Image (cartoon, rainbow, N blue to C red; front, side, top):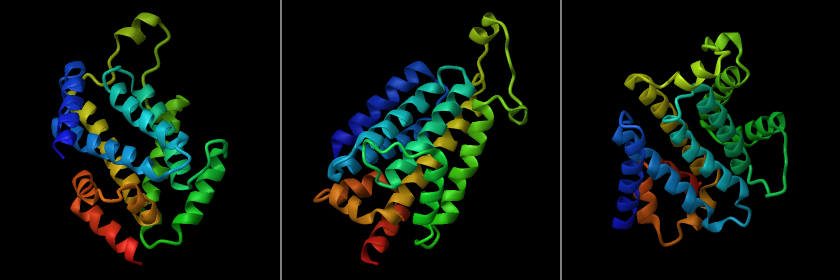
Length: 217
């Protein structure tokens, strides 16, 4: 599994060259989670929304070096939508609307103990993203009407703020995987066929316990 560590090191090195303030340990966890999603696609016949989710995850990390908090929330909202499509195992051509995505996701998760509580965090995050995307006054964001101000402004200029946003996304990634481990354990078992050692490396011990418990139920 040395190849995974090398890939993660390259991932961190590249991002740190663009944004030095990013916390390396958090980036490492994010990288492992993204690699998990890439393996998850091994047993899927429809991968469009999974690939879109992976693209969103990478773009969210990149957005932290792009200065715009609104841009960060815009992509994060897209990530939540694509995660629900992956969770529901939608086909590539399925263009289900957002309201129905939430409704069907809740209906699915109600069947599994504890899953709905985790999903509440996604709903809360999605609502927060919508405030920023639509420039709702409750978001309390600075609005600039001159190009120079937009270009020069850096919403992530402080170490604490950029890493707080990074940790927030790390938590969302972890919860995404947790919900898949609960609801799609058989798919994960097939995706990591003969690669359970890699699965153990990519997710936490707590999440691996969730996986084995869900698989045996």
